[in-house]
Length: 169
Image (tube, rainbow, N blue to C red; front, top):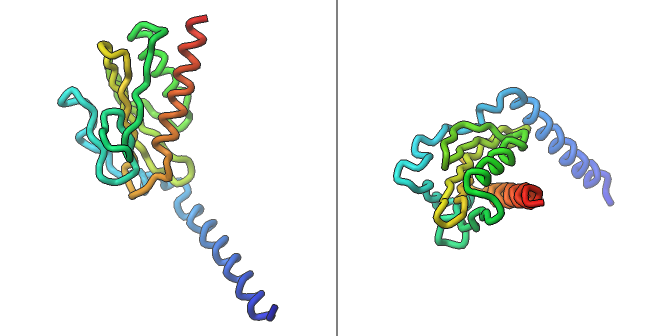
């Protein structure tokens, strides 16, 4: 291999590392730059969670399309109020979560992605008649979330189910 080719490859690697480190240092402590604006249409003004936008960075248990659809949380082992309290405990167990609004049947939390500071809006709506908790998790910025919102809800589901099972024992 030619010396020029070797030097070019190493230079490219070094420049990439410098760029990534520089970006991290540049934005360190300035995470609000990437937080986006708090949506003014969250909540359940119409008794429903807001639909997902056309972008793939959102999941919603009320969505009919497969890209955005996710199964709601279910509770069969606990009373509705106890299930919702258990869900609140689960949400508060995440370091990156900040509870912003809570009623007897609605929870809104912001999840901040470490280092880069992107903020996702996560909502839960209790449906006592169907014994489910509807969910919506959406990124404020960008087009793709690399599946972060779906993974987050599935992690919440696993922890929520674990709490329910422990409560039954």
